[in-house]
Structures are given as C-alpha cells and as structure tokens.
Amino acid sequence: MFSLPNPFTCQWQITEEMIDHYGHVNNVAYVKQIETTAWLHSNSLGLTIGQYQALDRGMAIRTHHLEYHHPLHLNDRVICATWITLCDGKASLHRRFEMVNTATGHCVFSAQTQFICIALSTGKIKRMPGEFIEAYSTAYRLVKDHV
Image (cartoon, rainbow, N blue to C red):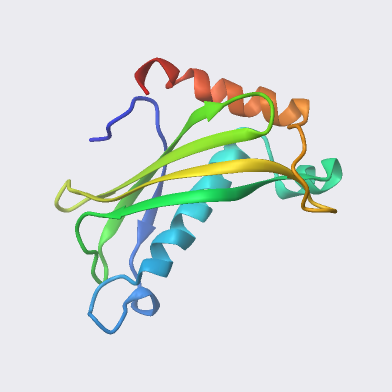
C-alpha cells in the first residue's frame, strides 16, 4: 500500500468544511493533515509540545514538496502515513508523507518536508537536543535502508 516499510499511520475523514468551490478537498486541508500526522507521530515517539517548549527547541519547516495525485471528496476516508527519511543528528530532519484513499486504494497525495531545528525563543537554527536525536533517529532507522 505504501512505498516504504514501517509507516506511522493515522486516519482522516473528509468533512464538509474541507471541500472547496471545485467540489473536492482544498489544498490547505492536505497541509493541515500532514501537520497533524507529523505531530501524532512525534507524540508517539515520546515528544510533545510541552517538551519542545521546555527545551526551547522546535522543528520548523524549511521546505515542502507536495504532489496531488487524485482528488478527495466529502466522506472519503484516508490512511495518512509518515516516515522520518533523514535525521542528521545535528539540525536537519526530513519526513515523507503518503495518503491513501481507503475505498480505492489509490495514493491521493504525497509530500516531502525538510525541517530544521530552531530555538523557539529566537527562531535561530540550533542543534537538536538529545531527546530529539534519540526519538527521531529511532524512527529513521526503521526506513533508512529503503530510502
């Protein structure tokens, strides 16, 4: 179903407020869902917003590459997957995302995002704290031989 092994997955159901004037899901909803999926994955790795704030560190988006393959419509159900595809142990983290429509089995959306570690207090690039390196490197090892 997915292009890489060992994804973190969550479910997404399309609701009325996500539908745009073309009758399908607005592109902003996809971006919101990859944010949600990334946070759920980080939380599952033991990293919470409270920890980010206590450490004065966060992972900020540097670049997004988004691909829309098939439209989604009202009431569609989607499996959202993410993987850590790079954790350099310094300041850079990459994620890959895929979304599959459960009714058709088609990949409807894919994305790659590069994150950079910053100090929340200043916005300046900083080295990842040990807690980030440990959690994200563990997830990265699950896929590194396949990317």
